[in-house]
Length: 438
Image (cartoon, rainbow, N blue to C red; front, side, top):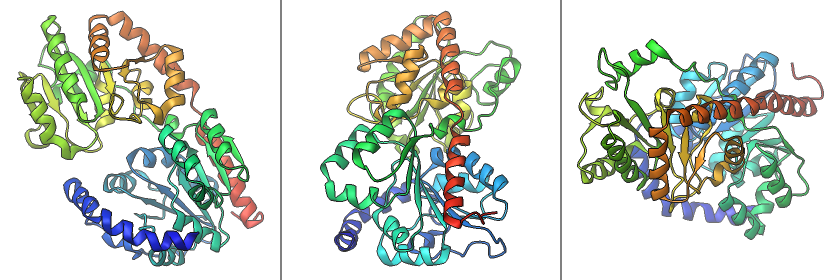
């Protein structure tokens, strides 16, 4: 079965290559360590005597989630060689900035047999850790050939992924049969994994993204100064209401432009900060804004927002958390049809930002269910309802305050997954090395 994948992969890779090269060029930042993807990676630190741990985190969200786990592993396993790989340029840059405890940070290799084989020979890990639902057949086969345990942490399955795995029996056997243990993000995710594999132990460790270290939320004069520096608050005046479009996708910006006009028409001083999920979509977003006859400041090219502009396009990387902490209310992107999956509501919840999202939050189904049961978010079914609920929140400070306190309570109740995940990983290290891991 693996040989069928090995024969098929190069053909699929060549078909998809123009698309991925184009996307890499648009996003930029991929020139550094480009050879990593083709197996030309350095060897890890030879001076550490402990086990070699290889952790893979796809992009920014996963890097932030795994960072406290790596910090705890370094504290508990001081002689371990810790390798962190990532897939995106933004994830790689963030890892270099935030994950000082890793001995080596590199890009994850293309899942083609000779490339993966070369990287495995260079890294020689004693334990492999994958996150969420990222399961590469060749990577897993290399682990099996070397009898290296692979753990899937923060494991979750969207509705779409679950349907695909249930239909593709050969793929299910190819990937899940190679795992040693699964630490699921929620009870629902655990139940899904148990349906897909009866041979791999599955337990619930919780969602690591709840345990990300969030900087304190600015308040009072500190918030005013931060907004002034961004051009979102006039000197000597009270801050305007800040509506955040968090990781928006096509069509969602149009809705937010309409609703900010309605809010301002009600006499409420307000600004819309748009943070599209993909910054290279800036031209499409600008066209949507122009159709609504609104003015905009583009952060990447114009700096702080013009005081007379109702819209600030934050087409930069790594600043969503800052804008989330400063917002008065937020719309969570990729949640309105035809999009599916949703972007994370966890950061907004951690900061107590009242939020609205659409029905397509399948990537965060368990989290959103708990959030809604707690009364910390408003779920809508379509664009029209989203407009009405955002307008209602803008007009009702008491309702915003209620949602804020409830979403923060929800976030506090869901913390603790790092400790459980680290315990699972250290048990695996102990099993692998027979008690000689430190």
